[in-house]
Structures are given as structure tokens and as C-alpha cells.
Length: 337
Image (tube, rainbow, N blue to C red; front, side):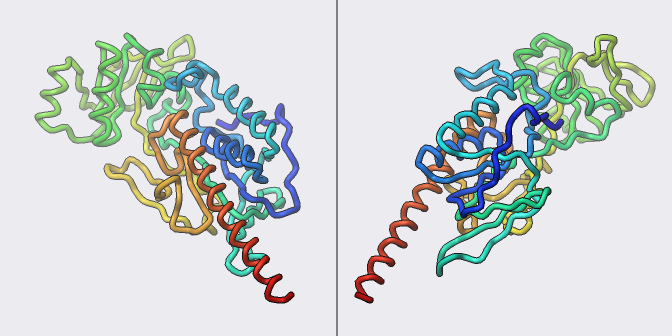
């Protein structure tokens, strides 16, 4: 669900080459930009205004900020980045690619937005987040982030003691069910054609998790705008107030093909992410990734921490590059003197 950004001023893209451009304005991107800006690096954040947790009423599981609306966290983050001289620009990235270096051995990247504006930077931090792919069940998507949830740590406490249903999507849903069983005694597991072996069925029975093998037909709305339950293919109705889904998680890659970043699939068809190493480094020199774009299960706190680590690493390598350039210039002056 897009977030309205009209209430927030968008900074102008600078004409000069920047130290870094951050693609993605969530927790990882803003915290990476904060570290860079506080190190007096010129940095701009390109924010598409479509954060993953936009439908949620509050963010949970992050000490001090627990219960804070996601929009408020982003608002504060933008203000803090700007406080140190960073810029935040709202827009969609149309392309990102290598640019001709100004000096031999230097790195340059050009990021172009959908409106035709572009910016050049020496380094890139990709923090685009991910998309949750929901199963194709009629009536499900409209409740995403409210009565349809994915994370027991993000939403579980608020859903405690409710009648919860697990809509199975694959092997990961088995563990998903055990986590949500901690939150309610009334749990139903809808297999949706996925296989459950005898051992798993016995384990579910021991925890009083009811298994329904009949195919799911649709999600039924309640009069209060939430979920009333699930209609099965045989016409029966199973009352549920909450549905939990282990979504397929896919890193957002729009406009980034030109960077040629390596990607990898997670086991069990859980999703696809950007491959990364220590501090978010990638096989592409000058490009880092952080947050859900590479760590698909990271919550807000972990994503922010990853962004901070990537930002500090970018600054450290820029400091080395600046020193190397200064030394080469000084030696050149001595040689020509």
C-alpha cells in the first residue's frame, strides 16, 4: 500500500557528484544515510514511499520504539537525516548503473528517477526492502497487515487468544504454526494441498492444532470489517478472526538491473534476495545492500542496525579512497615540481 508523501517535502536532487546515494527510505536506508551524514558525507536517500509495513498500525519488537506507528518512525528518521545535511527525495528509481569515473580507478554510479531526474554518486547503498507475495485466495489481500499477518513477533501479542488460522504455503508454515500456537489455544492449520507427514500430524495433535485438508475457497468478511472465517471448497465454514501466512518474500529489484547485483533463492521457496557479505558488501565494487533486500526475515531493529553497519563501512572505504587520491595528487605535485 503506497504511503502518501505529499505531506512531506521532497528535497531537490543535487547536481554535483555525491559521496553516496541510498536507494530505499525505510529503516535500513535511513539509518545508513544517518551514519554517512554524521560523518559529513554528502548523501541522498531515494524514497519510493511504499514501505513494507505501511498497513500496520504500530511497529513492535524494537525496544524504546515498540508500539510506534511505522509512519512516525519514518518521519523522525527523515528529519534526523536532514538534520545532518542529508537529503531525502521521493521518487521511483527507473535505472541505476555504472557511470564513467572522473579519475582512473574511481567509481561512479548514476541513478535516474522515473521523472527523468538523475544523480551521480561514488557509492550506492541498496535498501529497497521486499515484497510479500500472498497466496491467491479471494478476500485475503484486502486484510493484509490487519487480520492477515505473517510475523508472530510483529503482530502476535495483539492477536493473542483469538481464533487463528494458518494458511499453509509450504514447509515453512509448519514452524509458523508452532510459533502462533504459543499465542492461542485455538489454532487451525489449513494445508491447502501442501504435504504433512505422519510425524508432523502427530506433533500438531499433541499441541491440539486442528488440521483441515479440504481446499480453501475464500476468506469471508465480518460485519466489523475484519475476518469472519474461511469458506472451504465443500461449502463448510471455519470461523477464524486472524489468518497467518508465511509469505514468499522477494527483494525489490525495480530499476536495479543495471547494477548487476547477484541474487539467490532461499530454500523451501521462501523467497529471493540480494546476495551480500560482511557489512552488506556485494560482488559489485562500490555497491552495498542492507535490510530486507538481503535479510528477508529482519525486523525493523535488525534492518536499522544493518543499515548503520553498511553506512559506516561505506564511509571507512571512502576515507581510504580519499587518502589514496590525496597521496597520488601530492606525489604528482612533487614529481612535476
